[in-house]
Length: 186
Image (tube, rainbow, N blue to C red):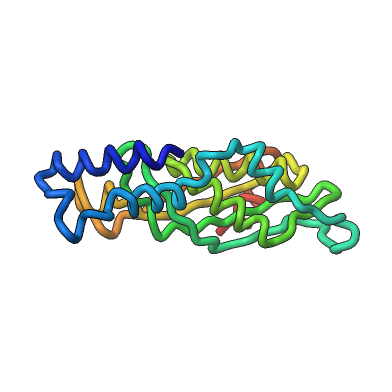
């Protein structure tokens, strides 16, 4: 990420909206924004494959006793909408997968969701990214992802409907056509 370019452009943005970037409260804003973007968009530096490699610590399913689906619910993430650079917030992710000989460390599931969200995203793509990464990291073709979240491009601007929530579901493998597996995400 080119932090110097971000600082330059944020300074220009401040001027363009009629602010004085040299006033006390804004002097360090370009630097702070560049640092924030580096942090909240960290996932842009990695492909789905690289994230799966980073967080792909697995254990033998036989050693854990996991024979059925592994389900983790209420993983909190946030992201930024690629259309307006608006915050996607109060996002809750539920993930389920069927172990095929290996299980992921539980913290890895939450880390995968967090890193995939740290990109300019669409909620639909975020679900697909999480499913693909979990599938590779867990060595399982059978993954379901449900995301429910609020989008400030809907709640704070445009239609300004603060109660609007968006729900997306992504199903791959056995989850695609099995309602019982899909219901695990509710």
